[in-house]
Image (cartoon, rainbow, N blue to C red; front, side, top):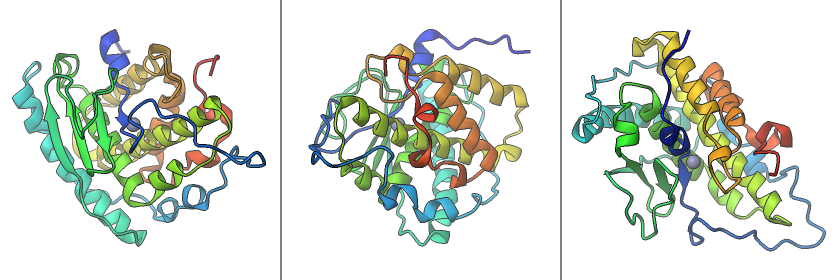
Amino acid sequence: MITRKPSIALAAGLLASMLLPGTAQAASPAAAPASASASPVRATALTRSPLYTSGRLPVTRCTEPSVTPGSVASARRYVVPLFNCLSRSWATQLKKARIPFSKPSLQFISKPQRVCGAKWPGHAQGLYCPNYRRIVVLLDKNITQQAEELFLMDVIAHEYGHHVQNVSGIERAFSRLPSRNKSEYNEQLRRLELQAECLSGAFIGSVWDSLDRPTDDWEFLLDATRESGDEHSKVRDHGKGRTIANWLRRGFQAAGPAGCNTWIGSSAMVASTPAN
Ligand SMILES: [Zn+2]
Protein backbone atom coordinates (compact mmCIF):
# COMPACT_ATOMS: atom_id res chain seq x y z
CA MET A 1 0.00 0.00 0.00
CA ILE A 2 1.24 3.44 -0.84
CA THR A 3 0.52 6.20 1.57
CA ARG A 4 3.04 8.72 0.29
CA LYS A 5 1.76 11.53 -1.90
CA PRO A 6 3.80 13.74 -4.19
CA SER A 7 2.96 17.41 -3.94
CA ILE A 8 0.79 18.73 -6.77
CA ALA A 9 3.51 21.24 -7.64
CA LEU A 10 5.99 18.41 -8.01
CA ALA A 11 3.60 16.32 -10.10
CA ALA A 12 3.27 19.27 -12.46
CA GLY A 13 7.00 19.87 -12.39
CA LEU A 14 7.89 16.30 -13.26
CA LEU A 15 7.51 17.34 -16.85
CA ALA A 16 11.01 17.67 -18.20
CA SER A 17 11.63 19.22 -21.56
CA MET A 18 13.92 19.53 -24.49
CA LEU A 19 14.81 22.98 -25.69
CA LEU A 20 13.94 22.88 -29.36
CA PRO A 21 16.76 24.49 -31.32
CA GLY A 22 15.98 27.83 -32.88
CA THR A 23 12.36 27.79 -31.86
CA ALA A 24 12.57 28.02 -28.07
CA GLN A 25 9.41 26.58 -26.53
CA ALA A 26 6.66 27.95 -28.70
CA ALA A 27 7.65 26.00 -31.77
CA SER A 28 5.29 26.33 -34.67
CA PRO A 29 4.52 23.48 -37.02
CA ALA A 30 6.97 23.03 -39.87
CA ALA A 31 5.49 23.90 -43.23
CA ALA A 32 4.31 20.76 -44.94
CA PRO A 33 3.61 20.10 -48.61
CA ALA A 34 -0.11 19.58 -49.15
CA SER A 35 0.41 15.93 -50.06
CA ALA A 36 2.60 15.07 -47.09
CA SER A 37 1.28 12.58 -44.64
CA ALA A 38 3.20 12.77 -41.38
CA SER A 39 0.98 10.48 -39.36
CA PRO A 40 1.94 7.73 -38.97
CA VAL A 41 5.56 8.82 -38.86
CA ARG A 42 7.56 7.33 -41.72
CA ALA A 43 11.09 8.72 -41.23
CA THR A 44 13.30 5.66 -40.80
CA ALA A 45 15.75 7.58 -38.59
CA LEU A 46 12.87 7.61 -36.10
CA THR A 47 11.06 4.34 -36.76
CA ARG A 48 14.07 2.09 -37.41
CA SER A 49 16.90 3.57 -35.39
CA PRO A 50 19.66 1.03 -34.62
CA LEU A 51 19.04 2.01 -31.00
CA TYR A 52 15.98 -0.28 -30.88
CA THR A 53 17.95 -3.40 -31.79
CA SER A 54 20.94 -2.65 -29.54
CA GLY A 55 19.70 -5.01 -26.84
CA ARG A 56 19.36 -4.47 -23.12
CA LEU A 57 21.38 -1.82 -21.38
CA PRO A 58 24.40 -3.26 -19.59
CA VAL A 59 23.50 -4.37 -16.09
CA THR A 60 25.71 -2.20 -13.93
CA ARG A 61 26.02 -1.32 -10.31
CA CYS A 62 24.83 2.19 -9.62
CA THR A 63 24.79 3.11 -5.96
CA GLU A 64 22.69 6.03 -4.81
CA PRO A 65 24.37 8.30 -2.28
CA SER A 66 22.20 9.17 0.71
CA VAL A 67 20.55 12.53 0.33
CA THR A 68 19.28 15.13 2.77
CA PRO A 69 15.79 16.41 1.93
CA GLY A 70 15.71 20.16 1.32
CA SER A 71 19.44 20.54 0.66
CA VAL A 72 20.51 21.70 -2.80
CA ALA A 73 24.14 20.76 -2.11
CA SER A 74 23.10 17.27 -1.09
CA ALA A 75 20.90 16.90 -4.16
CA ARG A 76 23.87 17.84 -6.36
CA ARG A 77 26.03 15.21 -4.67
CA TYR A 78 23.23 12.72 -5.30
CA VAL A 79 22.76 13.52 -8.99
CA VAL A 80 26.40 13.61 -10.12
CA PRO A 81 27.14 9.88 -9.55
CA LEU A 82 23.83 9.00 -11.28
CA PHE A 83 24.88 11.16 -14.22
CA ASN A 84 28.16 9.22 -14.34
CA CYS A 85 26.25 5.90 -14.27
CA LEU A 86 24.10 7.15 -17.16
CA SER A 87 27.21 8.13 -19.14
CA ARG A 88 28.77 4.70 -18.65
CA SER A 89 25.62 2.80 -19.59
CA TRP A 90 24.74 4.84 -22.66
CA ALA A 91 28.34 4.97 -23.90
CA THR A 92 28.34 1.15 -23.92
CA GLN A 93 24.89 0.95 -25.48
CA LEU A 94 25.59 3.39 -28.32
CA LYS A 95 28.83 1.60 -29.08
CA LYS A 96 26.77 -1.57 -29.53
CA ALA A 97 24.45 0.39 -31.86
CA ARG A 98 27.51 1.81 -33.69
CA ILE A 99 26.41 5.37 -32.96
CA PRO A 100 29.21 7.85 -32.10
CA PHE A 101 28.81 9.05 -28.54
CA SER A 102 30.12 11.81 -26.34
CA LYS A 103 28.70 12.64 -22.96
CA PRO A 104 26.72 15.82 -22.31
CA SER A 105 27.62 18.52 -19.82
CA LEU A 106 25.60 18.98 -16.65
CA GLN A 107 24.42 22.22 -15.06
CA PHE A 108 22.44 22.79 -11.88
CA ILE A 109 20.27 25.78 -11.13
CA SER A 110 18.30 26.37 -7.94
CA LYS A 111 15.70 28.71 -9.40
CA PRO A 112 14.38 29.26 -12.94
CA GLN A 113 16.77 31.38 -15.00
CA ARG A 114 17.93 31.76 -18.59
CA VAL A 115 19.89 28.74 -19.77
CA CYS A 116 21.41 27.94 -23.16
CA GLY A 117 20.41 31.42 -24.31
CA ALA A 118 16.71 30.87 -23.69
CA LYS A 119 14.06 31.49 -21.06
CA TRP A 120 13.44 28.61 -18.64
CA PRO A 121 10.24 26.76 -19.60
CA GLY A 122 7.92 27.52 -16.68
CA HIS A 123 6.76 23.97 -15.99
CA ALA A 124 10.04 22.08 -16.31
CA GLN A 125 12.18 20.42 -13.66
CA GLY A 126 14.91 19.66 -16.16
CA LEU A 127 15.94 20.70 -19.62
CA TYR A 128 18.18 19.41 -22.39
CA CYS A 129 19.80 21.83 -24.83
CA PRO A 130 20.68 19.95 -28.05
CA ASN A 131 22.84 22.75 -29.48
CA TYR A 132 24.94 22.89 -26.31
CA ARG A 133 24.71 19.16 -25.52
CA ARG A 134 23.87 20.20 -22.00
CA ILE A 135 21.54 18.87 -19.33
CA VAL A 136 20.18 21.41 -16.86
CA VAL A 137 18.46 20.31 -13.65
CA LEU A 138 16.37 22.71 -11.57
CA LEU A 139 16.98 21.86 -7.90
CA ASP A 140 14.15 23.85 -6.36
CA LYS A 141 12.33 22.93 -3.18
CA ASN A 142 9.64 21.02 -5.09
CA ILE A 143 12.12 18.31 -5.80
CA THR A 144 14.77 18.66 -3.08
CA GLN A 145 12.14 18.19 -0.37
CA GLN A 146 11.37 14.79 -1.87
CA ALA A 147 14.98 14.03 -2.76
CA GLU A 148 14.77 10.52 -1.28
CA GLU A 149 12.21 9.49 -3.89
CA LEU A 150 13.04 8.44 -7.44
CA PHE A 151 11.96 11.77 -8.96
CA LEU A 152 15.46 13.19 -9.30
CA MET A 153 16.67 9.98 -10.89
CA ASP A 154 13.78 10.09 -13.37
CA VAL A 155 14.48 13.73 -14.27
CA ILE A 156 18.20 13.21 -14.92
CA ALA A 157 17.59 9.92 -16.77
CA HIS A 158 14.85 11.56 -18.91
CA GLU A 159 17.14 14.44 -19.88
CA TYR A 160 19.88 11.94 -20.64
CA GLY A 161 17.31 10.22 -22.88
CA HIS A 162 17.08 13.47 -24.86
CA HIS A 163 20.86 13.43 -25.22
CA VAL A 164 20.68 9.88 -26.57
CA GLN A 165 18.02 11.08 -29.04
CA ASN A 166 20.33 13.91 -30.05
CA VAL A 167 23.49 11.85 -30.68
CA SER A 168 21.51 9.15 -32.49
CA GLY A 169 19.96 11.59 -34.99
CA ILE A 170 16.43 11.16 -33.65
CA GLU A 171 16.13 14.77 -32.52
CA ARG A 172 17.26 16.05 -35.92
CA ALA A 173 14.87 13.74 -37.79
CA PHE A 174 12.07 14.93 -35.50
CA SER A 175 12.87 18.58 -36.23
CA ARG A 176 12.52 17.86 -39.97
CA LEU A 177 9.18 16.09 -39.76
CA PRO A 178 6.44 17.85 -41.67
CA SER A 179 3.19 18.43 -39.80
CA ARG A 180 -0.09 19.74 -41.13
CA ASN A 181 -1.35 21.45 -38.03
CA LYS A 182 -0.63 22.14 -34.38
CA SER A 183 -2.39 19.00 -33.22
CA GLU A 184 -0.24 16.76 -35.41
CA TYR A 185 2.90 18.64 -34.38
CA ASN A 186 2.02 18.15 -30.71
CA GLU A 187 1.56 14.43 -31.27
CA GLN A 188 5.03 14.22 -32.82
CA LEU A 189 6.43 16.19 -29.90
CA ARG A 190 4.77 13.76 -27.48
CA ARG A 191 6.41 10.84 -29.30
CA LEU A 192 9.77 12.55 -28.70
CA GLU A 193 9.04 13.27 -25.03
CA LEU A 194 7.55 9.85 -24.31
CA GLN A 195 10.58 8.21 -25.87
CA ALA A 196 12.86 10.17 -23.51
CA GLU A 197 10.70 8.99 -20.60
CA CYS A 198 10.88 5.39 -21.84
CA LEU A 199 14.67 5.65 -22.08
CA SER A 200 14.63 6.88 -18.49
CA GLY A 201 12.67 3.78 -17.48
CA ALA A 202 15.14 1.62 -19.43
CA PHE A 203 18.04 2.99 -17.42
CA ILE A 204 16.27 2.69 -14.08
CA GLY A 205 15.35 -0.90 -14.98
CA SER A 206 18.95 -1.71 -15.87
CA VAL A 207 20.34 -0.55 -12.52
CA TRP A 208 17.33 -1.42 -10.35
CA ASP A 209 18.84 -4.45 -8.65
CA SER A 210 21.79 -2.39 -7.43
CA LEU A 211 19.66 0.41 -5.99
CA ASP A 212 18.61 -1.43 -2.85
CA ARG A 213 15.09 -0.03 -2.98
CA PRO A 214 11.75 -1.73 -2.32
CA THR A 215 9.32 -2.20 -5.23
CA ASP A 216 7.05 0.34 -3.52
CA ASP A 217 9.49 3.11 -4.46
CA TRP A 218 9.13 2.25 -8.14
CA GLU A 219 5.34 2.00 -7.84
CA PHE A 220 5.32 5.39 -6.14
CA LEU A 221 7.19 6.94 -9.08
CA LEU A 222 4.65 5.40 -11.47
CA ASP A 223 1.75 6.70 -9.35
CA ALA A 224 3.23 10.20 -9.20
CA THR A 225 3.82 10.10 -12.95
CA ARG A 226 0.18 9.17 -13.53
CA GLU A 227 -0.74 12.31 -11.61
CA SER A 228 1.57 14.47 -13.75
CA GLY A 229 1.30 15.21 -17.45
CA ASP A 230 -0.60 17.49 -19.77
CA GLU A 231 -3.46 17.67 -17.27
CA HIS A 232 -1.30 20.30 -15.52
CA SER A 233 -0.19 22.19 -18.60
CA LYS A 234 -1.68 24.33 -21.33
CA VAL A 235 0.54 22.61 -23.88
CA ARG A 236 -0.30 19.11 -25.15
CA ASP A 237 3.34 18.15 -25.55
CA HIS A 238 4.12 15.43 -23.01
CA GLY A 239 1.01 13.25 -22.91
CA LYS A 240 -1.45 12.64 -20.13
CA GLY A 241 -0.06 11.27 -16.90
CA ARG A 242 -1.25 7.74 -17.62
CA THR A 243 0.40 7.82 -21.07
CA ILE A 244 3.73 8.94 -19.60
CA ALA A 245 3.60 6.27 -16.88
CA ASN A 246 2.92 3.58 -19.52
CA TRP A 247 6.09 4.43 -21.44
CA LEU A 248 8.15 4.75 -18.27
CA ARG A 249 7.03 1.23 -17.33
CA ARG A 250 7.65 -0.17 -20.82
CA GLY A 251 11.23 1.07 -20.70
CA PHE A 252 11.74 -0.33 -17.22
CA GLN A 253 10.42 -3.76 -18.22
CA ALA A 254 12.59 -3.89 -21.36
CA ALA A 255 15.61 -2.49 -19.45
CA GLY A 256 16.77 -1.20 -22.83
CA PRO A 257 15.59 0.89 -25.78
CA ALA A 258 13.78 -2.00 -27.52
CA GLY A 259 10.50 -1.00 -25.88
CA CYS A 260 10.91 2.70 -26.68
CA ASN A 261 9.88 3.03 -30.33
CA THR A 262 7.19 5.61 -29.71
CA TRP A 263 7.21 6.56 -33.40
CA ILE A 264 5.30 3.45 -34.46
CA GLY A 265 2.86 3.51 -31.53
CA SER A 266 -0.80 4.29 -32.20
CA SER A 267 -2.18 7.76 -31.49
CA ALA A 268 -3.90 6.30 -28.42
CA MET A 269 -0.54 5.19 -27.05
CA VAL A 270 0.75 8.76 -27.17
CA ALA A 271 -2.48 10.43 -26.11
CA SER A 272 -2.70 13.79 -24.40
CA THR A 273 -5.84 15.00 -22.60
CA PRO A 274 -9.15 14.49 -24.48
CA ALA A 275 -8.89 17.92 -26.14
CA ASN A 276 -5.50 16.95 -27.59
ZN1 LIG B 1 11.66 15.88 -22.13
